[in-house]
Length: 168
Image (cartoon, rainbow, N blue to C red; front, side, top):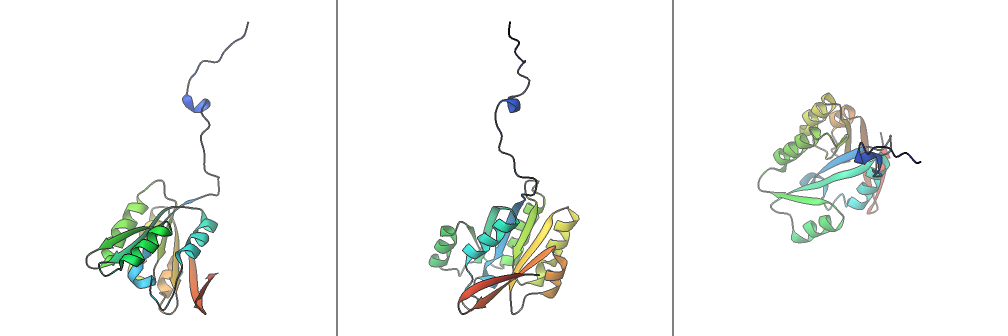
């Protein structure tokens, strides 16, 4: 006679995909008007590769103002990011999006791609709420206060039209 265990939970029988212990979920917000400039010639594919070293990018949004071209918006979509076009100042919308990520229990790392020290309170609020923080910027003009407040900072440097990253 065979004995069968009583079905107590579906979890016992359905294999669930669980994240690796060290694997973190990242929410990335890109300050489009500040970062996606011709003089920087930044490539969002490079940013995605950098994010893969830190964990899984679950949210990737690029905030743009109303002057963003259709070609830029299409390029952002083609690179796997979500464009958010706003009327007026993108900083306010970026702060709102960041607060949503901070209070999202599925996001472990708040990553901001900006040079702007205006986002220092966001970094501090994220840390207060137990989130890891990462800032990605480009010189010149990358706020030292922002770099020093975040857990990690990445400086992208445009060299001969190609991007190289360094971690500080």
